[in-house]
Image 1 (spheres, one colour):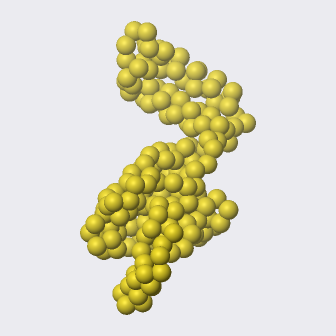
Image 2 (image 1 turned 180 degrees about the vertical axis):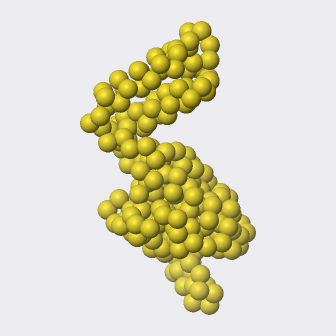
Length: 219
């Protein structure tokens, strides 16, 4: 509990300097709530919040401006329909605050942007938190391609299966084209070591047939 003298001082500072004193980790959440799965679009598919042309040839020109946004645009585009893609996120907080990145926090995928936020909004008295999450955990309402709400989601096992199918198709295609892949067909003992092009083509054909009912579209 704060005494009346503290409360009066706090209110006076707020009135004079238009500032808000942070008293606890829970209070340091930003001025408005970050988007989540119930009111935002995920990093892996922003259509619905952004128009469908976001992923088209004009997307960069329409939805990103400046170096920061351009770099982040390509991260979002690369994550399209890949909810299990690992993503690094960052958050600038007051230097003396002892917290971690938590559900409901505003975060960014740009370390540079987080540093700029710390310098400009925290009087250069800041530190940067970082965390590896997945594309399925980040949500936007279209305010900025640099700012996302963190709302961790359970793993999508169906999407994991699709990802594994896509990877195997790509690997088989590469080997058919003569490529050598470490731990795949390079050394004796590797699963496809010594396989001829004809053998690999037959393996690919059988694999495609076995997974024909799975919507594994390769991007």
